Image (cartoon, rainbow, N blue to C red; front, side):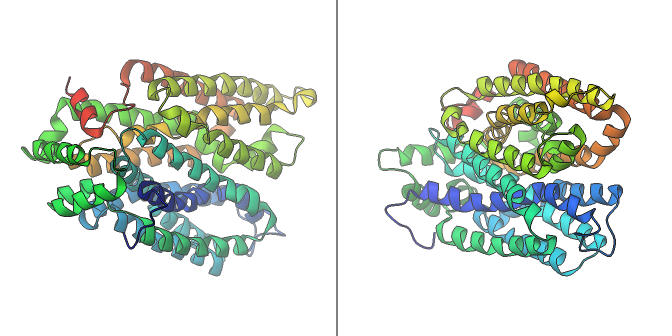
Length: 454
């Protein structure tokens, strides 16, 4: 670290400085909610003519297609130049993407820029999850990782609050400047992880990091020995040998299952088509205001997760979260079905905003942050980058599929049918967590690996 302040906990300083990157990339996800209606309006579009529905679906979804590639690029890079330097490198494509959209007013330029934005989007979630899992202690790893959810939701909120009220070009200029703040903060306050230095054989640097980031009451020597022992155990065979082990297979199935269920809860559609959904449901409130309400609910609901994550445990919170989402999505599907078939629901026009608010409350207290927490916990250091790359690629790929084809599915089965499908997926997630997920709360990364061998 460039310098340290005695009054600042180095772990919290590193996590909060790095989480600013998550704020920026999260804004790229919900950017489409206020921007697409402007691009489709002849009086507000910066293009020569309004975009079509197909163009809008590409502009919205290409960021997630880019995110399927980002994890591979940046997780591999993190094994070469370190977690910290890799996170810093993501500021470059972020700046370039928004500069391109601010300066070139063509749909094709937006396609390129949105795809480019997806690279740090996917990379940030993969590498920063790994980073937090390695730098946090066993007692606060869940709450630290859940801080990610709070910052991400604040990033989701930003476009909802700012985007509808300013021109698209102005909005893109603002977003182009923001990565500069991240670069400064994380350069000054970010720590490299002891796990990375140990893998590189830099034991002295690893010990120096642990002494800086652990309070005097924590057994740094024991943690150092645990890290060293696990790395030595994993170096006994090839990476392929590790990946063939039953503990890796079990870890992989749990993590990939959670991160496949996550987008299929419907969160991608709600975030990226928020205003459009409210237009379709006939809400009496202005759709832009409804989207802001959802963003505020999402942010404030995530504030409770850091406290609960290390008290109630991962399994309990995930099952409660999935149950809550299913309970609120299925009735919303019923409302949309009758609305689409001409029923007079004017006295129930408040229901969509209420149902989606409760859906987001449920999502943010479980399936929003905790799959990423578990992803950072269950893999050995030696294969962590490979596992993160594969699983986050699958996660973003599922998100791209849902976002790109959401409007197509709505045309085929209706908005009500879409929410029924999402509700059934949420219900299925309860069964998956109950039968396959083991508890990781309060355990070191090394203890989790020992449990996986049982």
